Length: 492
Image (cartoon, rainbow, N blue to C red):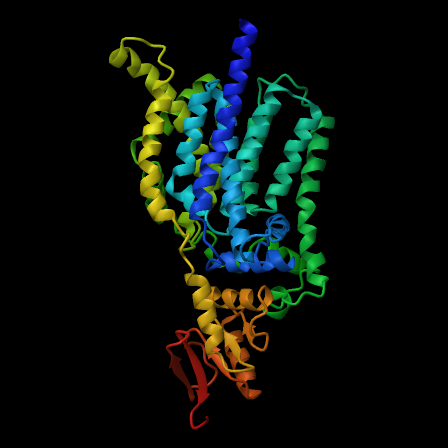
C-alpha cells in the first residue's frame, strides 16, 4: 500500500510538473508575435542571426542561444527569436514549480503558484517577443532551484554546476551580478551539511569564471568579417581592446541612465514598483508575498534572507535607472515575489481554514484560491499581452525601405534603424541603403555623418530633423515612411 501511495505521488508530481510548463507554453505560443518585433527585439534578432554584436552590454549567451533558435524550420527569423522568449518563460514556470515544491512540499500549491506567475501581466508580455527579460528570469529561477537542490544534496559537482550557470547567466543579462551576493547567501549560509572549504569555493569560482568567459565572444566576433559590425561601423569602439571591451560590458553607452533617478525621487520609484507588483498579481495576492516572506524568514531564515538579498540587489539598480521603459525590466523581482506569494497563500489558508471550514488540514484551500486568481488573470492578460496579430514593426520597417531612394543613407532613430538592419541583414532587402546609428555617439557625430553623406551627393533620410550640420538644410517630410529627406536649400 505504501509503495502504491508513493507511486501515485510520483505520478502526480510528474503530471503537475508537465502542467507547470505546458499550459503556460500553450498560452505563450498562441500570443507570440508572428514576426520581428520593435525596439531592442529587432537588434537582438539581427545580432543573433549573424552571430554579431548587439547593444551594450552585449548579451553573448543570449545571442548564442538565439542563433540556435534561428535554425527552427518555422516562421521567419523574427518569429523564431520570439519563440525563445516563450520557451524561456515556460521553463521559468516549471522551475518555479520545483522551487515551491522544495520549500513547501505541496505539489498543488507549487503548480498553482507557477501558473499565477506565468499568467501575470509583466511575465506574459515578456514571453511574446524577442527580449532579454524572459531568459533572464529563467536564469534567476534556475540558479535558485539549483541552490535549493544543492542545499538538500550538497555534492561538489552540483555546486560547480550552480556556479557555472550563474556565470553563463551573466551573458544573458549582466545585471545578474547584483544578485550574486544573495545567491551566495542562499547557497552557502548555514545550516548546510556540506563542507564549505577553500577547495570547494575555489572550484566554484573557477566554474563561475568559466561561465562568464562567454564574454570572450565579443572581441572574437568583433574581429570576424561581419556584414554588420555596429561597434566598428557606428560606435567606433574597438571591442578587441581592453578599453573598448570595458566600454561594452560596463554598459557605458547607457551610463547617462545609471542612477538617473535622483535620491529624493527614489520613494516615488519605489511606490511605482509597488503599484506594478500589486497590479501584476491582481492586487491582494501581491500582499500575500509579504506574508510568505515573513513566514519564510521564520522557518528557513538562510534561504529567504538569500532570496531577499537577491531581490534587493536587483531593485537597487533598476529603481535608480533612468530608462523610460524600465517597467519591463523587473521580471526577476516578480519571479522571486511569486515564490513568497505561494508560501504566503499557504500560511493564510492555515489561518482561515479553521474559521471557514472548521478544520486546519485543508491543504487544497491555498491552491484553489490561487487558481481562482489565475482564472481571472488569463482572460484579462490574454487580451493585453496578445501580440499574435502585431506586425506593426515589420510594416514600419518595410515602409521605410520602400520610401528610401537608391543608394540612400538613413540616419534613423534607434527603433527605425534596427528594423532596417533586420530587413537588410536577415532578409536581404535593400542592401544599397546605408544605415547610420549615432545613438551612442557624441552629439556632433550625427551632424558629421549627415554632412559627409550630403557631401558625397547621396540621398539622406532622417527620422527626426535635429543636429543638422547646416541651417540651410531643408527637411522634406515623407508620409510613406514618416521620416524626412534632407535637401540643401536651392538644391534638388
